[in-house]
Length: 332
Image 1: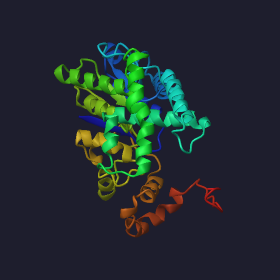
Image 2: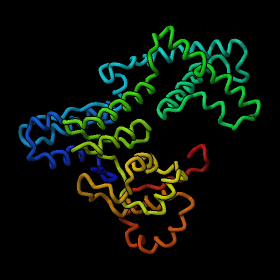
Image 3: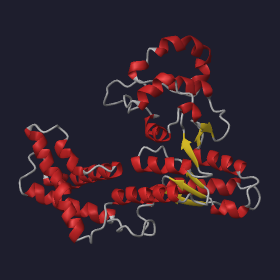
């Protein structure tokens, strides 16, 4: 199982390209061309392709670059599944549903002008449930049966995507799937196929934290394939065990390393088992300072013990930083 990280502070695309060519110096060009690199965004795809071109050693073929979130939108991925609903058309339909809901006097506080924002909130809720594979009807039991009146009003509003939208999707949209629902199903189909018959082409998942549940499942499956590699962006291998314990237990969701917890949980890896993709030489003193500053509240007692060791390096750790004091929270 090969899981790597581009160290904190380095530009991911440049560092990825450097490590990629270093590992493939003796690889036949045709095998490089069959290598599939899955990245997280269109921008990351452009930057990574540019970095690979700039650093290519002599003449060589480039690997194939695809986008992780676009797998579900591709009708050729899992062609037996219905295609995804067009996101813009879904957004406009939900705005109309919300407008009708508010016009009927069912929205007690929201004006009609709030319909686009409320429709977007419903889309986010729908996508989050689909990403996790949770039926949206589970919300009805979220309070354990008894619930206050305002929760009942909330459920009535959510019924637009629990009850009304599925009917529209089945009739007016030809049974097409919601985008994140199809993305999750495509990932499940791909990983199941890899288990039955491992892919012959090398796979690399690059630049994603795995914060989205379906993406974490896919990255874990990539790491388990023969020759498969996962390259994480800015994962902190030196994170203290007590900090990682808080993150892994879900008690520090605001920590910048928290998005990696799900992926490492899928793989059963500890932070120290993630390997550097390139040499780590970037500002170790500043990284140590930030590592302390970002500790979750239950483990900030380590500041007192760590301060004497960090004191000699504090000037290097804060070089180039500026302190700006805000007079009010609004100004901050």
